[in-house]
Length: 246
Ligand SMILES: *[C@@H]1O[C@H](CO)[C@@H](O)[C@H](O)[C@H]1NC(C)=O
Image: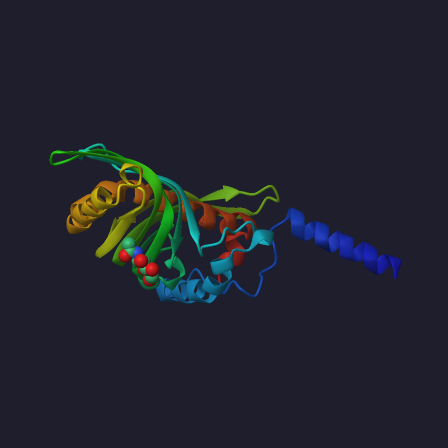
């Protein structure tokens, strides 16, 4: 009995200090798979229900909701909008359209659609809309429809503490195009209802140009979240485990 407990501890310790055994939520793909992109798409879909709630044991954050700490509009426009602690709902309904996988160069190009995203968070706005000085802060909610994203992922090999080869993210860039949507800023002008309605109306009738100012911040926030998720998975399973040479 004692030796079994001992064995258990040894196994647990080995698993903790070396690359983990494959859990059932990870379907791996052979690095020589001629349809590697499609294989990765299938395993991401298989992984999605787990990703939705996150896997604290594997240091994988939850995707539903996805928390974006801060999004600041570019200074190009006359209006400076800062969103903070934005919860994004709907990212797990992602449709993976295509993954172009180049295993030799460890380069992946991922095209995906996000049919509907809902956001909830806080905002701070300051700026000039035609003749009106706009300012306010408070809660914001909004819906983005038909978002298309393209992710360029470059991985690199690295030696793990156990001597095995692991992959890590070298660069990850996201380009996003928001199809359409609607935002609602509450408590504009300290809660003045008529002015608040008017400004929300003006924002939403110029939604495209308005959202363009926010897109670079959205892209870099999403890129760093994806990097974090990818690195969590990649740091725990060796290259040979994730992409067996079968
Ligand atoms: C976004 O959609 C939700 C439900 O789908 C709705 O309750 C909310 O009012 C919408 N927000 C805006 C700004 O249209």
